[in-house]
Length: 322
Image (cartoon, rainbow, N blue to C red):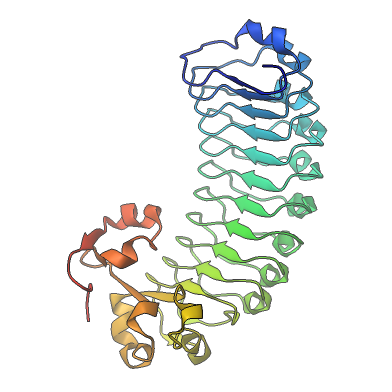
């Protein structure tokens, strides 16, 4: 058992089992789906622990966990954590931090001092601002801030040398800095359901970008999209202009581009019907938001959060509209 996984998942535990002290050399520990509220002081004796699962418990304070010197993966989803302690800076080997579904309102600068962190998931919290120092996380390739209360994005958002996936949807973001395009590894940007009024001109410099969801904003002009784009969702925007060069990216129905698509809504389809006729049916996805209908083949490409928000139902017809 030493050096492998100890498993206590879903055992209705209200306290950490003291028998763990008999396995101080354990590297992986799963305590998911219990009723743990307090971390015992003796946890610091488990110095070899590399992976710790504590999802779906009742924890509020994780300060003691920052004294685990070998920890590389820490999962804390769906607890009652209100803050990340400054002592998190001690976790020099931490590579992945999962803290979705908590009550975190502030990210300390200390979090930005983790030299090996490559995955940071903080969806469904109460975060309002982002520290400019967040870009000090030079190994970060995945950042998820879905469904928080963020209004402003710092210019430093463009200073992640390895960032590939950035999820900023369902916040209150008013403006995305031009610097976003400086992330040369960024391939997937999700920023639907915000308050954006324009696509920053700098985004065109994001030459690795393939997947962009900007639906459900206030954007009138669809432009500044790099020609590397493969999947672009623009529905639920009051669009009055689409750059013809963008439409050309979806006109070639080749085997290489069979998974490429432009996703629009009924109003956009009717306003740009002539222009959109050049796109093959396989590469043009459509949703009738006003009637709550979505063609069954397009359903899987709509985020679940928006399907729920709009109460969309799959249509049995061959299309939602023509």
